[in-house]
Image 1 (spheres, rainbow, N blue to C red):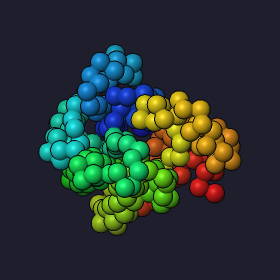
Image 2 (image 1 turned 45 degrees about the horizontal axis):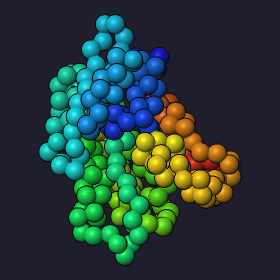
Image 3 (image 1 turned 180 degrees about the vertical axis):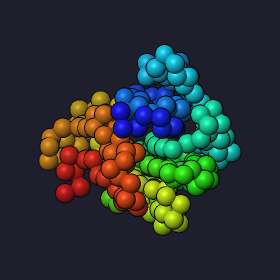
Image 4 (image 1 turned 135 degrees about the horizontal axis):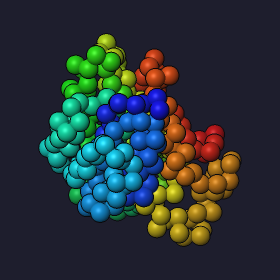
Amino acid sequence: MELMGKRALVTGAGSDGIGRAVVRALADAGARVAIHHLGQADSATALAEEVAAPDVRHCVLEGDFGDPDQARRVVRVACTAMGGLDIVVHCAATLARVPFLEIDDAEWDRVHAVNLRGAFAIGQESARAMVNNPDGGRIIFVSSVNQDNPTMHLVHYVSSKGGVRMLARSMAMELAEHGVTVNLIAPGTVETDLNRIALADTAFRQSKLDMIPMKRIATPAEVAGAALYFAGPTAGYVTGTTITVDGGLTL
C-alpha cells in the first residue's frame, strides 16, 4: 500500500483500456482516485464503486478535452473534491486511422486539440495544484511508441504524440525545482476500446503481431504497472523520461 493517502486523478478511465487499469492499480496501492470519462458515466461510476473502500468517497468527472476549459475544470474539481492532488495520470486520447492525403483540417485539429492541447491544459493545471504540495507531485502522460516512431495512416496522431513527448520533457525541466516529476509511458499495441475494432481484423492483427518480438499484444494492466512505478516512492528521482511498454516492438 505504498500510495496510501495519496490523491490521484486518472483521465480517460471510462472505457475498457489503460485508464481503467491504472485506476485499479493506484487504488490497490492505497490511493484515492478521481475518475475522468467522456460519455461513459455508468462505466466510470461502476469502476468507482469497484475500487472504493467503504469509507472513501470517489469522484467521477466528465469532460471533453478537445475543450481546454473542460480539461482544466476536471483538474480543479478533482483537486477540490480530494483536498489536493498528488498524482495525475493522463490517459485520455483520440485516434483515427486516415491516410495522409485524406486528412482534412477538421480531423487534424480535433486530434491535436484532444491529444496535445488537452495534455497541455491537464499538465499545466495539475502542476499549478502540485507546486505548493510539501512533497510535490507526479504527472504521468500515457503517450505511445508513436511519439518517436512514425506509422501508416496516423500522421495526425503521431505528430500529436511527438508533441506530448516534448511537452512532458520541457515540463520536467521547469517543475523539477518544485518537486514535481513529469514522465511518459509509451505503450505499443494494447488491447483497448480505442483500437479493438481495428484489431478485430485478422490481417491487421497479424501485421501487428509480426512486428512484436514477444508475439502477443499487451494487456492494459501491463501498462498500468509502469504508471504505478512512476507514481510510487522509488521513482522520486526520475523525471523527463519514458518507459516503453511494447514487447520489443520498437527494437
